[in-house]
Image (tube, rainbow, N blue to C red; front, side, top):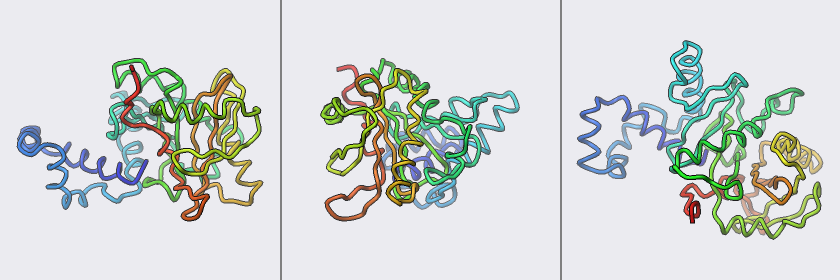
Length: 270
């Protein structure tokens, strides 16, 4: 999740605790944007600047509610495969996939353990939730997954962003359609330097993007927590895109591959 989303979650949680009548009056009188400004000081009472906000939603609402047979709580889904889906309040269609176990992020050793859940596979298999939220089909060519680095995120619970990409980003990726499968090449996307590989696989089940980026980080002597990851379709398979955090210089990268997504989904349905 990007830096702005945690405050939006905080506002939503704060307002959800208000009486419905009070909430309606406040929104009608001011509009949501002004409401956000009016309640900025109140957000400190809940989850603003709280890096555990997502984990608290999963562990205190979604999992207990599901275990009690009352549905997934604040989540859209809790899976026996060890993940939950949450509708992000940023973007009309964006969903977040999160482990139901405590997993901080890209730097977590649990992700590299044999037999660990393939969260990226599960995220891709649940991409239809974005189409449902938008009430229109999102073609796979305009769908993507992203996870930010430790330095490029606001939350310390692993969360994979499931959302659209723009047609311009699809066009930028298409410049690498002929990349030899399994080789890594430099790619400049959104004016930042990334590395990209094309994986020949008809399904997400055999892509294993985390393992591929981890191997790259280890080969270069870099901390995996400084890497972000992005995945989108490619001819005959998928692109796996690796973003290594660098603050300055010609190879600068924010470590937030979420920047490659389009949370407005503006090109869907055109």
